[in-house]
View (cartoon, rainbow, N blue to C red):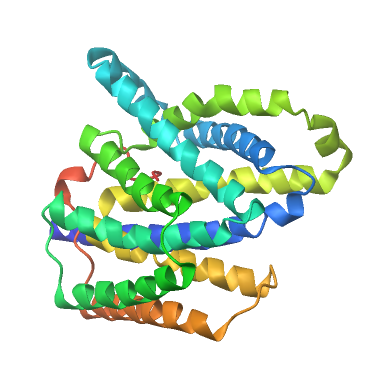
Length: 313
């Protein structure tokens, strides 16, 4: 059992880091999808994610998990409402990710992603009763210092920041508490979003624009493929890792987003930014040191199911 938990723990860490790397790449794609707007990009993204995940389910013979979940929801109809709520929470986060940078709220969004891991750690302690190692506590303290500086520079918290910082933890807690943290649930969540995606695409037709520009078609296909892979890895990590470790590892993503902004989006690094990201990177270094000092992070045994750990996020 310990060996099994060790393998699951290493797999969860690699999944979290891999997902963060993929989302870093996705962050640099929207500028290359102009003239499509944020809502149009999101509509295409949802449709293509469903297509790619459905194809993956066919190749990996995973439809039995979906059938079992649907049967379970028929026996417990309240799970349908929970899944729809989870889908709405995820839709909101996907929409924010595209809307904020185009409307001058990029800083508010980034700040939300900096606060999010701390909220996840708080959830792990208060809701799941997890205990933190000394190095993990030190990592959280370092990250908290960086976040406090970022909040001070931003002049406080705004609603996009709070939606990210509170919405994602609610999403993950709901999935885990209801037993809907599976690959099948992920596909059903995205399927529940399809009517909204189709409505957005129909309200502002852009199919002719995409058809006339091969780079847009390629960019959208790449966005859909990366999104499906990234969410699969991210949800797997959220499922097999303790919430505290999953929360701290979430800092990999905003650090990578900063690197993408500086290298590919050609944004400017200001000296004051060091007071935010140096403490956060220090916290990540402490976490890496802890991982090296231990054989592997411990995964919660009650949530490890052979038929669903292959693809989930």
